[in-house]
Amino acid sequence: MTDESKTPEAENEEAAAPEAGTTVDPIEALQAENAELKDRALRVMAEMENLRRRTEKEIKDTRVYAVTGFARDILTVSDNLRRALDALPADARESADAGLTALIEGVEMTERELLNQLDKHGVKKLDPAGQKFDPNFHQAMFEVPNTEVPNNTVVQVVQAGYVIGDRVLRPALVGVSKGGPKEAPQAGQTGGVDTTA
Image (cartoon, rainbow, N blue to C red; front, side):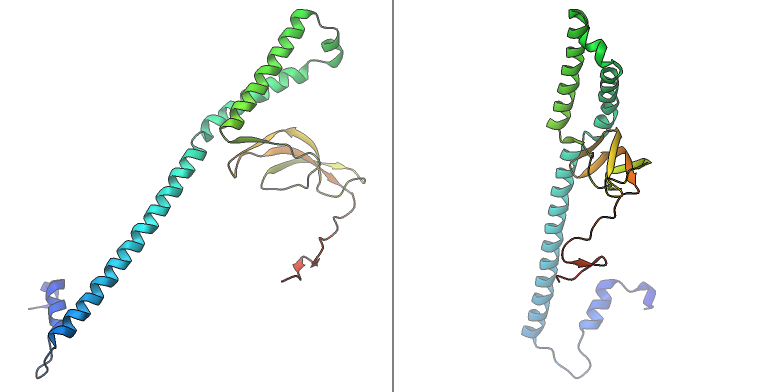
């Protein structure tokens, strides 16, 4: 019989076969087989537990992030409502007749309700004004020379950003300060290395 024609069972039997002149204790053979089966069962149980955990996480992520595409598309509607409100000069608002005032209030209420519904489904609006620039949540569009605020502080928001769960749906488009004082290192840090550990 050649090596190519041997089946895995035949190889196991040959490996388990006693050498000439030795006897195998049946109890030891059964104990070895029992230990092997026990090891296989434990491995299968561990694999099943890992699969269960992965499946639970995937289901949870699907629930949280299922509206991502729709939410990203609907943000343009929210942006357009805000642009419509911002396009109306303040003096025109004050001198508006009852019909125009009702229209303005209706558009404001529609925008508020849209944002409330997005919030209800886990979509949160980012308001980064005055915060330190974070490339994970903000996209810098330009730098603003300003010596009164620390470098890399968001001083202007061009377009609001949104997150869904812990993922960025759309980064905030911002202007950041330049030329201000350097940010002081936090307590317990020297040169960017944490010395508290």
